[in-house]
Amino acid sequence: MTNGFVVRRPHVTTQQTLRRSPVRDRGRFVVLPENRFAFAAAETLAQRPRRGPAALLTIDGAPGVGKSHICDHVLQQSRLSEGESRAMHVTGAEFAQEWDEACRNRFFRQFQESYAACDLLVCEDVQGMRRRRRAQEALVQIVDQVIAREGRVIFTLARPPRKITGLSQRLVNRCHGGVTAHVALPSSESRALLLDHFAKLHNVPVSADAVRLLAREFAVSPRELAGLATRLAQQSRQQSQMVDLAFAQQLVDTEPLQSQNTVPEISREVARQFGVALRILRSDSRSAKARIPRQAAMYLARELTSSPCQSIGKYFNGRSHSTVVHACQRFEEQLESDLALQPIVENIRKSLCEERRTGDRRKRVNKSGTRRSSAG
Image (cartoon, rainbow, N blue to C red):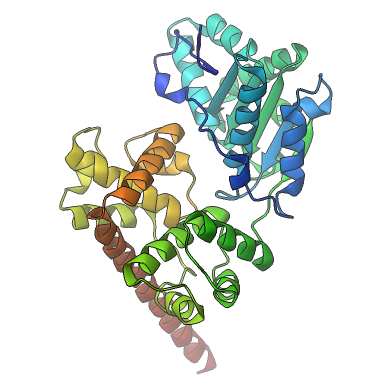
């Protein structure tokens, strides 16, 4: 049975793991030297190669470099060109959890058959099933069946498969059995292109000097640059001012990103600013009092840290990768339209920024003291 583009598996109760891939405009993906090969390989795979190495693509790279965007592009292209073709989009941790549940309920045969019948299997964050040997073996068998049926498979990982402990040799071999592509963090030149792109999406004028300064000072992932562009847009509109060199320098002086806040730190500050208890923020409550601050915390955690969605969701009472992505999308939409939310979020950012600056100063003092002690 299909529901739109993504097959639903009635034997699995965790239906939230099955999600419609968000449709992204191809023009919103910026092809850079760091991701060009991975994107080209994904384009080839989207054209349905018949077996061979091109039918399996493994992409590795740090959180936030755009691996999920590439996967979304393939899913979108397949949906547009093939209509009702069946696809599975799942993370490694979700796959392992579903496999355990299927085994407990004696649905493992139906589980394998539903996956093996898909035309496109996308498994993100494969490292999430480390040390889950039985689930890994099930995934290997499913991949072999999908490829044998002339289907396609995409894996994403935070590091090269051979460097991740806890993955079976068979799964590592499958990851390396097709096309492998590494997506690196962007260079200063690439960061400038991304910042210019994000600024145009927000309809915010930014001078070339400001772009170069921000790109040089903020050596972060594309996801963090997108968050930086969002903050620039909000501050620019609030002050009715173009982002020129002086504006950018002020941001550099007040918001250093050399160190990061942690997910717990962000959550505590969000809870304080919204006036809710941290335990409610992390609970399963769906009331607006808990839901909106929780979405804000997830949104800021993705923006201000390099933590993957899986880790963020784990902090919030074990929520899934897809739940975190959906929460961030919903909050971003609300932030654009709700003027009352914007100053609250900006105050949270300022408080977290002050924590980072305080931490950086302490580190500098400690290092200075250590050097003096050594000299003495």
